[in-house]
Image (cartoon, rainbow over the protein chains, first blue to last red):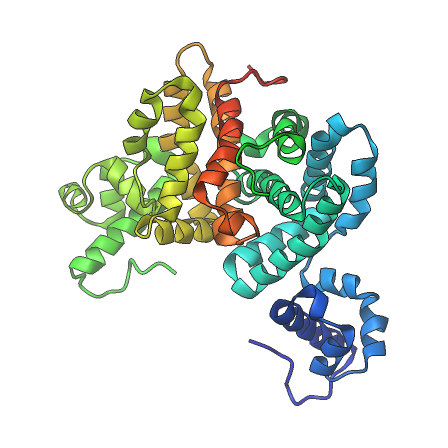
Amino acid sequence: MSQRRTGRRPGKQDTREEILAAARDTFADHGYESASIRRIATRAGVDPALVHHYFGTKEDLFRAAAAAPIDPATFFPQIWAGDPEGLGERIVRAFLGVWEDPETGPAIRATVRRAVADERSAVLLREFFATLVVRRIVHELGADKTPEEGALRASLVASQLFGVALGRYLLRLQPLADLPVETIVTAIAPTVQRYLTADLAGLPG
Amino acid sequence: MSQRRTGRRPGKQDTREEILAAARDTFADHGYESASIRRIATRAGVDPALVHHYFGTKEDLFRAAAAAPIDPATFFPQIWAGDPEGLGERIVRAFLGVWEDPETGPAIRATVRRAVADERSAVLLREFFATLVVRRIVHELGADKTPEEGALRASLVASQLFGVALGRYLLRLQPLADLPVETIVTAIAPTVQRYLTADLAGLPG
């Protein structure tokens, strides 16, 4: 399935695709931390400077490789800045915003569809979730929570948000598919709030 | 993609497949209520008695067409029989049981994967959910709840349960993928309980 070794001399578009394919393989095989730009460049048979030229930082390249239409980092400051009681509501609203948006919505639907169908894409989405979402949530929760507890809370939040996305946008279950966004926010924000902040009985760590 | 008109004289396996394909098309096009066994038999070019012979009742045929490995009806009595406070917990445990079971687990994973990838399969899963799950939950909730409220509660429950399934079994997000079942039951049962029984502010109806 790889188109990296065609024997043709690559044009600009080919080079970009070669780097992306090498990045996908490297991130999936070695994880985000161990996947250096140098390693990816070597795999693609190009100079590391060219990787930076096309894709910017390693994190930018990772988002492109994982086909993530948004940078979760851009949401974190505004989500965590407000009152602690509104945390769940702000998270649900930001998450649904990405799926409802005519620019990012189709892209994130395609990404999740691909991850459900294809194991390599699932590995990339997992790595993306673990690196760019869970770690930041653990950081934001603060030092009084263990990393294990933070990761558990993050994945419970994901279980609710991904479930709404699956039901509303991918399977289009009724009435979930046609509810106003604000009805969903009202209904599930307390769930997200509880997963992030409440005592969860039987929590490990 | 249809293999219903091959020109070959069908053997037993072919007849079974022809009926299943006709059932999928008919249920997807007309919905469960309007899709009679007679209509499906006509579409498959067989006698209605043969449909009953191969698949039993219309509901049995529907479950086969939707590739549903379980009959939700078998769970409802035991789930609703116990104390009302344990409702969420019994639902989560029964749901995870189907996904964890070595018989039904792979089948339900395949069904959901297919529904995410293919619109016709999604239509069948939606129809299955609306007919065999939502209506029964509305019935069990009792006459003091409107059908609209019951359907909303059912789809919120689905958003949490399907999200756990997507994260744990299809995407394998950590730590969700490796948590003991009982930890998940403890964490999400209160969510399901709340969606079914609590006052939800801003609820339609």
